Image (spheres, rainbow, N blue to C red):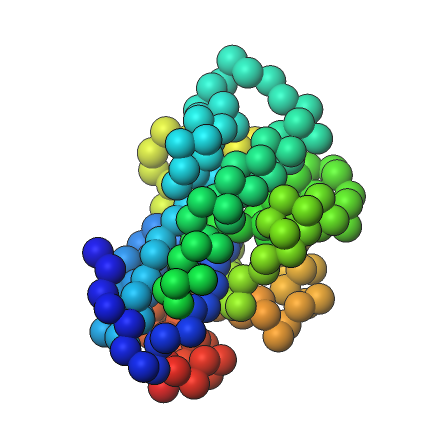
Amino acid sequence: MKMAANHHCSSGRFISLEGIDGAGKSSQLAPLVSWLQQKGCSVVTCRDPGSTAAGDAIRAILLDRHEITLSATAEMLLYMAARAQLVAEVIEPALNRGDWVVSDRYLLANIVYQGHAGGLDPESIRQVGAVATRSLEPDAVLLLEVDLETAARRMQRPLDKLENRGNEFRQRLHKGYRVEAAKHPERIHVVDATQSIDAIAARLRDVLADQFEQLR
């Protein structure tokens, strides 16, 4: 559902939610969007990869088609193709209308998953990402940080291809997100995601209100 923007929220902002699998992004998306709407923002949500016809087809290849084996580079480029379409079809038009965009993952996930954890050069991924997204970066990245034990406990469901890569891969993910957050503290906000859903939601609201005066 979209609500009309009031004068406070007339200029759109782009927020992405990040974290390892099991960090709780899915649980936080709806309350965050609801709060933004209460503040009078018109909000568009999306997931990366996905949220376009091309993106959903690519997502199936990346995460669900277990019989398709991809090299790390091919995998990274497929994510970029899905993201390029997401930016062109969903994110840029929304921001141009003055809407707020909340995305479940974005470029940082590629840098961490295929770079820090997957063995590709993170800076090369960043450069390819700049081409794919026309250098569109989130105004704020909310990084839900959780220990591996808690994350594993939360994922009591069938795992997709990336989630099936085991504990060493997850440890590299955890470290990669920390490295990236330390590099860009002005944009990547680390939030303790081991707390209750309500406590995490409250912390996310505080972080965004600190950064965007429209939300105070």
